[in-house]
Length: 191
Image 1 (cartoon, rainbow, N blue to C red):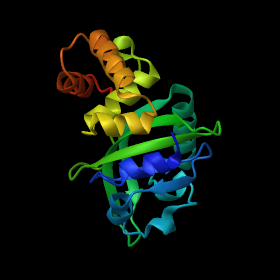
Image 2: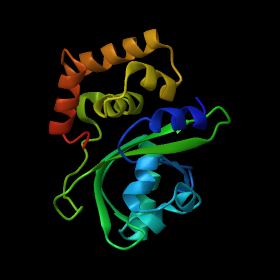
Image 3: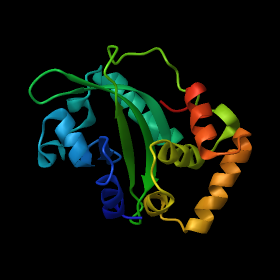
């Protein structure tokens, strides 16, 4: 899977998506992300995560380091908008390895129109004993990507994807992808 494959899939979705390198520098964001924050796409690329998030930079950097270790994160975010104000969202983030051995963080942000963007929700990182790969798969399912889109992002054949979905569903003791997504939301595994 290449960064271009992520671009192709994520340009088709209507919610903000950001891709960052292992140093927490923005490499890519889809049109929805740039529009939500009031930037052109090229204005975000090259910025550090701490420049766009409205949070203590030490907390942001520590959280990003934790993401790199666990492979996934879900939680509330507040982005600084170009013309002032804050964009509130709930993000589901996963790490993905690229062919050159580098890794990227893919952040899928669901806008919220209420609250202050700060929450005492604690992500249940070990819920259902899912691997980080299974959480990543669950994140992609929960935002409504098709099997073809998920297979492209994960660089896996469709038959292997279906096998992975079935293993995840068995671990969660549910019979459908929808039930898995709902259960993950209720358990605070996803937001």
